[in-house]
Image (cartoon, rainbow, N blue to C red; front, side, top):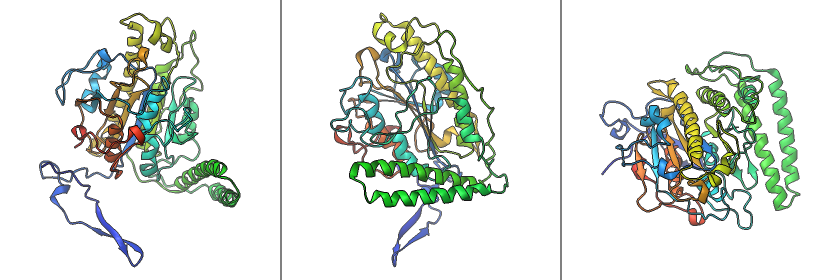
Length: 441
């Protein structure tokens, strides 16, 4: 029987006289690596989580690898990932089980939340998306609980805190840089005197929050929900201020990235997606390395987008429906997108953290809104995972589902890999009680 690894910082917890107590554990064998010589996951770097998403799907016959387990071969559409293959796990043969009532919409809602649309409302998520479920746990101590970026000029986010509470993406690299590395950023380990204005800002926020809480007692249920979302935003600002007042620990990999250009204009109606994506990736990577955030989502392109890609004769979505088989331009767009994913994965892997890398300390979920775009299919759903989440996930393997398993199993696997103690994941037809043990360590 295979034994799960246990973090050596695990303690026994309980209550005594109404107070919480904790007792440390001795040096157990379960803490050791497979050779029995060193503590498993012994470094102190935190786990991170990310999403890389693109719209309009893929061409499954050019995507799904041959072979299973560690013996698999890169397909045409995965070939841009050749240099990072050992860090990528491919999950194929999965199906979004929550239904397909809205083309390009049902897939990502089910894939990213494990739940169908709210009854009678196919415009929002019923529950938080996976990034926010994880951010509520591992992101609560960061300056930014999560960061959302968009590459396509009119990109929108599918990161939801709950119904009608979306986390909009920042589509300006300059604005993202200023938000993270502008005024208020403190280089980890750099001794600084806290800005005296921060205390004043904290007091103002406290006053606003107290007043809002009093107001909440007078509101109906719908308005209470809206006000609670507002208060969550206030709490997020408070967390940022708290982090600004602290002197962060020394993180050797932390460097302020190059400041982006003010604008990235289109050329002949075509946005410079690659340039924007790479600048965004560089900022995200350093935001993680500097522990400004531990959760991000990178919305490369949106569902149903008609962005003009290099050399394309029409918009992306139009091509998925109108280009004759074998759809060479659609294929080229997927290859373009995977090249940008490879840049992000390489950038994460280039950051050294102790004896490992930033990529080793995270899990990156890669997916889209459909598989075969022309059919709006949500079967054979495109799913990749990069990184091992501090050794919780296998790398460099292909898992092919034998029976169109529910994609919520991926969410349960990722949640557990990030340290969340879940027995199940999802709602309704999306509910699962088992994870993908084949990709777990």
